[in-house]
Amino acid sequence: MLAGKTRRTEDGNANWRTGDERLVKLTQSAAGKVTSLLERQGRPQGVLRVAVIGGGCSGLQYKMDLQDAPANRDILVESQGVQVVVDPKSALYVTGSELDYSESLEDAGFKVNNPNAATTCSCGESFSA
Image (tube, rainbow, N blue to C red; front, side, top):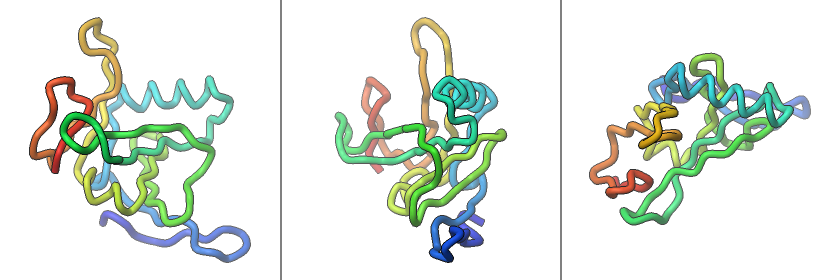
């Protein structure tokens, strides 16, 4: 199930839905790095936001950000002990993706392995679907 139960805030308003790793999942390496970054920022209960925005060489690019909590309408997935949030529009592009992290000299940083990407640019930072 990609998106399931709707969570409600204390005031009763719908806030976010839960999903599973069929939407997006993290490797152990990525989860470790995200956890480290959240702790360094003083928000160990925070979330990783994964979004797709227009731009880059191929038309779409990933945007990742650390936040305190899910926003309204987000889909929340727990992967490797890390909470990941995706907005409904971005979910259309990232479904089935795996987020990895590498510390190698040539290719350091987060990488998204996206089965929906029809093409990617040579820098690996953008894609088209």
